Each structure stands twice: as structure tokens, then as C-alpha cells.
Image (cartoon, rainbow, N blue to C red; front, side):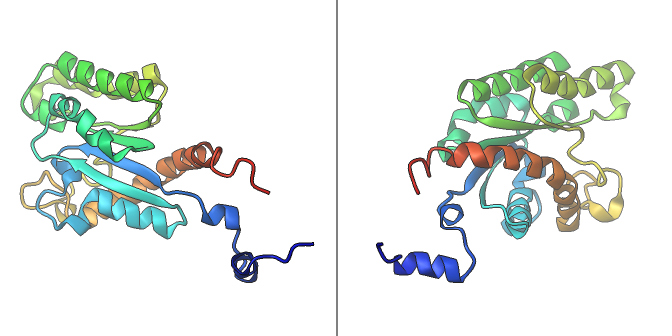
Length: 220
């Protein structure tokens, strides 16, 4: 019988699974605007960086890329989708639309842009999570009802997980926002990450077996 290799003995002594150790990180791209770009914050405090730390701390092997651009609309996100996908993500978190509403753009335009993003990700077999946004109430009931409904309707249409409101637990709370009352502080970002973790962990548990299914094929 062939003696086990030194590396295998090391794995066994340390209680590690050698196949698990060889898994490659799940690559996550956060396609968003200033809310994810980290406006007014150091990069290590931005949503993608805090999300990576939180997921790794919970045992997930991930790499999170920041594809947020301050001031971006849903059309801007669509326009640079190909650039964002150069990081070869397994999952794209879509956080777009806040600037569309702030500029009073027609909800049908936002819907079309997000629909196209989701369609193109599906074509490329890339998982997506859609983060919802809410329009300012001073734009009128007809507008905000039309805008707010974009996200649950598209999530159902494309069968993707929906996080209903990206700023849940943070919007309207002064101590969790910067002086402009719009962009979250570092603590505010941490609240968002904590609230999104359960949904994102569910998605990662689905992606991990698919990503490494072929990697260990044929190994004994």
C-alpha cells in the first residue's frame, strides 16, 4: 500500500479536508452606485469590503469586487456591465436605481435597464441578487408605487433572490448616515451587511457545490 504523502498527513493531522482546501473562492461583483462604491468612506469601510470580511468570518471562501460608481444610474450600470464582468464573477449583486429616482427618471426606463442586466447575466449563467430601492415619497404616490414595484416584479420574472430594500434599517436614521442624510456611515454599512447576510449565505450555499463540482471530479 502506498504511503500517504506528507501533505495528506498534514491535512489529516490538522483535521482538514484536502478536497475542501482546494476549493476556489466564489467571486462576487457588487454592481452599484455611491451606496456601494463607498461615497465619503475609506475603501475598507465600503459595502463590498465589509461584506467580504463578514462572509469570510463566517467561513465562506469569497472574493468581493467593488463595481460601484458614484452617481451611476441603472443605465450607467448597464453600460459598464461588460467591464464589471471582466472579474469573472460567480455572483453579481445589483444595487442600482437610487439615482434614477432622485433624478425623476421614468420608472419604465429603470425597469428596462435592470431587466436587460438580469437577462444578460442569465445568458452568461451568472447568478444574481437584486437589491431593491425605494423612490422618495415627495415624488408622488403614482411615481413611487410604479418605481418600488420594479424590483419584486423583476425578481419574480427572472427568478432571482430579492433583498427588498438595500437601505433597510439605515434610511432615515441620522446616526447611521453621513451629514447628507443619504449615504450610510461605516456603522450604517455594517448594518446593511448584517441584514443581507442570511440571504447571501443561502445563495452561496447553492453556488459552492456548482462551482467546485468539476474541480474534484475523478479525485479519490
